[in-house]
Length: 459
Image (tube, rainbow, N blue to C red; front, side):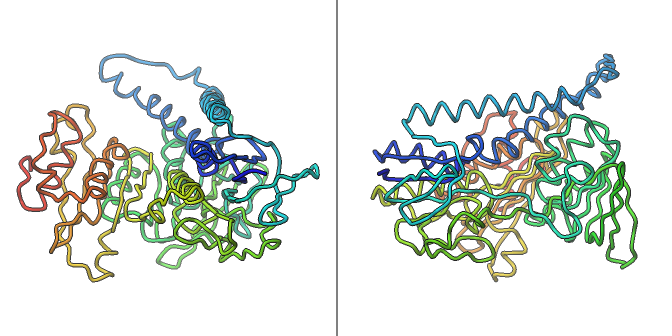
């Protein structure tokens, strides 16, 4: 009998397993594929490797400015894709090593829940535990009429498996995945069109910030169609045709060699045996309490099967909360959604946390805001990365940091200084008084904070 049985070894499951053994709990994790889940194998890691290689490829222009010329006639996208898989393999092995080092029992197989203390594998064997954590993740959402065949119509998994580039690509869905692949494909010379139903790309990000990204995309030659709905998709052996409708209600025909459909993700909660323990879902998600506990005592759910942001770092934190609760360590209840960083890795990068301006208005919060541009920072000018801005919202009465939104070079790294300030309940004067090294991009934080009170120096 194990203390904890975890179904799924993604960023939620494997972190939960390691933390559980650190707390002295006998732990078993069951994984039907490879450790690391979608994030490591078919998401975060391979896509970031492709983005990194795209940035190197684009550096040709900077080399030409130095008088150097590079021939691209021997360029091979299959080698780019192979390198992304090598990064995956290295990290999969790393996660496996960590699980082994921490004495987590790892079982390869597909688990089906038969009771709150028992799961059955496809070979008929059973694994028993005092507590069960469901961490089965999610999969790409399919919409009728836009089903994947991974040839002409790709999912986010299928596009990572490509070993040759299409000449043209229609991306349906302008969220994080769509924007990241738009950047990668455009960098390697693919003609890209992005179609987003809502009025701006990255609908969950601040509109003023995203406007900078949209402008940069268009300057790179990416066609951006926002406020545009995809009506139908037809495919032949070599092409796809998508009929879309914009705000003028006039249908428009788009054609390309391939289409990437990224409408969101579906939680993997069907066919895992939830009905056997009386756990019901809401729109596919498992309802949980403050410590990730379900309505069934001893059963927990974390990550993409829960209606919190579908982010690897959220899943990992939820895994820690669940096992610390099981071990009686009284963790902080639930994840503070206003302190969860968002990160999108196209260029320029987009990062944020906390309230957007439209949310603050909708909630009737009296706030003050300031923006500061990248071109006001010496380091940004020195490295020729001047496109971008930081936007900061604070409470008008208490000066509490309500939200920070950034677009620009290394925004996904820079966001954490102000997130730490928020979590530590620092006020703007605490940050503005701190000396930042010059020249660094981190000076954006202090200048942005000073701009709240009209004290910014370099603008």
